[in-house]
Length: 328
Image (tube, rainbow, N blue to C red):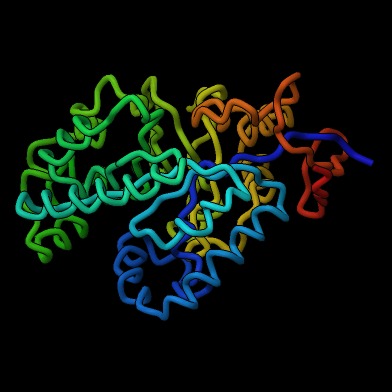
């Protein structure tokens, strides 16, 4: 017994970090998390590939039919070419000094070519406002072409980001200085939104928004990853500020989550918002499909193949005990 829902859309994931499951400590803050990734990332290629494969299997078991995945390498390319799931690939770039821009962009163009060559949706995208040089934002906007549907960027995931732009100081600024970053990153902008000016006119998905407020809400699309937000910062966004037609949901990576389940993410959102069941399912299925251009997914309509999940809803609510069965 229960209700039938379309397959879920995972709107933000880092499949290539799946081998970092249970490796990085919880609730240490974004900066600590960022520092830990390169320290823990050097493992054998076999472990990385096995972890990626197992993560995809977990998503399929949890009723996910499509994934917007962040890529820094080609590690996931072979798996994605099998097309067990629909993927939108964001080739993530970052450069904190002008001299690093060309190398990073050339690598991104090369990776975009590899992914597009096997028929995968792929867009070059900036990592975040604090890790991308202003000139690089302009270069990324110039690379956006007719094959691109949307661009993704990590946004206001930590209070340190606001502190950096508003007051030109804080732990994030100190860390960037240690890394010999160009001061233009934080000195030329007064807010995270300022850093997006060079991307004006491009469809954007702002991811996390943990510390966003009403004044940060634009006409862009927004993605929330509640379990990862709790894992890293032990904080959730204010869900009342979002337009329910422009918000979708992701799992982030197994480096910052104990599972890859959109249903579990929706349960957390339900517990911390006024969203009813219909709204929760819309942001878990319909919105993501529309945002990424997955035309056959997201809703039950003639001509579509959205997948079919059965969930045992009680009194129009989701519970921690709610079970899911993939029917098709």
